Length: 80
Image (cartoon, rainbow, N blue to C red; front, side, top):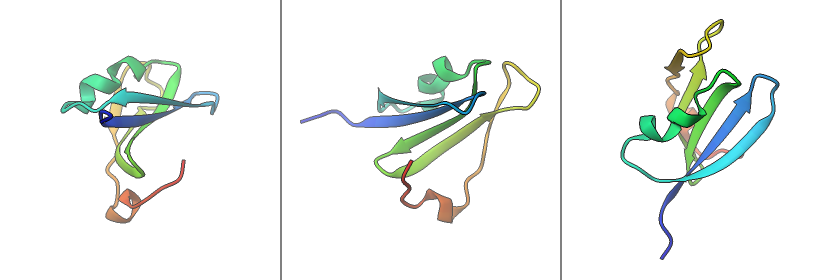
């Protein structure tokens, strides 16, 4: 039996896309902290094919991030 994982899709400042799988954990905030750097601009966390969190860097800031609320329709199945 395989452990459940989250797929983390990271977009850098230069629009490069990186996909990383991390173990599912109760606190996603701690799991995505290593990816909240000045080089990254957007972090999307997916569970299976559903977006469960979208975090973006505040424009003009190197270290401040904000969670973006997703409309219910956007939480449906996606293809990244």
